[in-house]
Image (cartoon, rainbow, N blue to C red; front, side):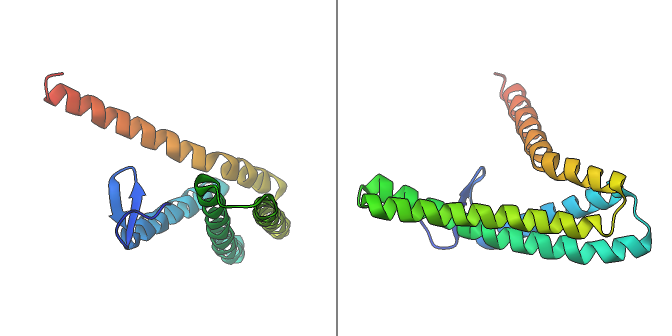
Length: 159
């Protein structure tokens, strides 16, 4: 997320919210993700207690990598916008971004290897599908919700 004009502000769909609210929203989304995943996998207590620490650690690692990745992308964008990066600096920034992207893929692979030691093949397949689709489904639901709100406002305003 991009910093707004005032310290502690994050630019977003709602104009601006402070970073604490943004983090709370992110934590809520992560809890929802965890609940949906555990419900989908239908795990017994023993398997669940083995898997949850791996999921939490994986999410923590991914969040750290993605925060660094976004920071590097923002730095590159800012430098390009201001036209103050040499060709060597651009290439160096791109290499840093590529390294973070590689690290992200390695963490995903490592998580899947650990999960394969705990889950059945069917559960592992469901995990792959869930991970690939969850974010897109959340975005789609958010768009639908916003569209419904906009339509309701238009009807209320007589438009």
